[in-house]
Amino acid sequence: MNKKKRIWPKVVLCILGVIVAAVVVLFGVLTVTEYRPDDTETLAVNGESSKQLHEGESFSIMTWNVGYFGLGQTSDFFMDGGESVRSSNKDTVKDNINSITAALKQEDADIVFLQEVDTSAKRTYYIDELEAVTSSLQGYQNTYALNYKVLYVPYPLPTIGKVSAGIATLSKYGVSDSTRVSLPCPFKYPIRLANLKRCLMVDRVPIEDSDKELVLVNLHLEAYDDGEGKAAQTAQLRELLESEAKKGNYVIAGGDFNQTFSSCDTSAYPLISEDMWTPGIIDVGEFDDSLQFIMDSTNPSCRSLDRPLAGNDSDPDKFQYYMIDGFIVSDNIMINLSETKDYGFKNTDHNPVFMDVTLSPAASAN
Image 1: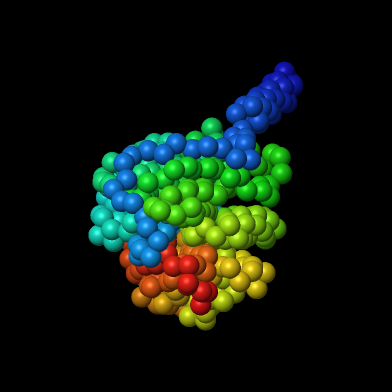
Image 2: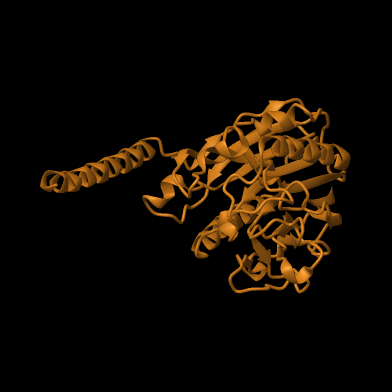
């Protein structure tokens, strides 16, 4: 018995040593393989466009956070207070891809901004979602920028695992240049190793018989920070947009801001609990008059993932909705229509926001 008693502490120490060694190796591997994008990177432009853009012309544009096609009505998510890490099975992910792609065909927007598009991730069964979407939509050029690339995300349990994801822009108009612009990352080492590296994707569309360009900025700003990350990223976005507007270019920035514009009436979607995730606020007064802010709050653009929507959508007191998706547009673009489409959050936790606009130097901010 005495020998056995002496052996057990050694066994425990060996087990602890193996665990510590495994953790050290894991952090070493994640450090070596950390995604470290340059401040700016040139991106590939793929596909074939079908249109040429002219001043005075109207066109449509839509932004949609597709929730990596895995956050439909039966899903919740641990970062929002839910329980799930992998929120859908493989068949559900495929169904979501098919349904959202069908909706994109139906809306037939000339330009589409998509956020949270996986190309190789455990959470979506390593389906190349970018290929699935772009191969189904004809007449579009497409660009893609990574904003989440981690060899292995080691939390929670079960772990998130490998992630390769980003934002995608589809355009029926020819794109002459696409650039990934890195945004400030608010997380320090080692937390940043397994976190997103946010960015702006800036696509430039030439305008026939004009020295101006249509500058398209697809974005997905910080979500789970203390607010400083959102503020720093918004400040960089403001500098870019104001600079392009001063050049006389036509500018449209759109996506998931994870913030509400201060000019947007969100009274229909009050915070039902202080425990819920709370979006930031973008003070539109901090931007100059060359820009206008578009959020249609007739329908919410996002729903909480603290629980599945299915079974809880009939009682508004049980569910949290948000208005965090929209557009910032230069004042030489006239807004003909702005609408948050109601797709009922069936296939993703966001609704798309749709605009019809006209390139018009005489247009002014609303």
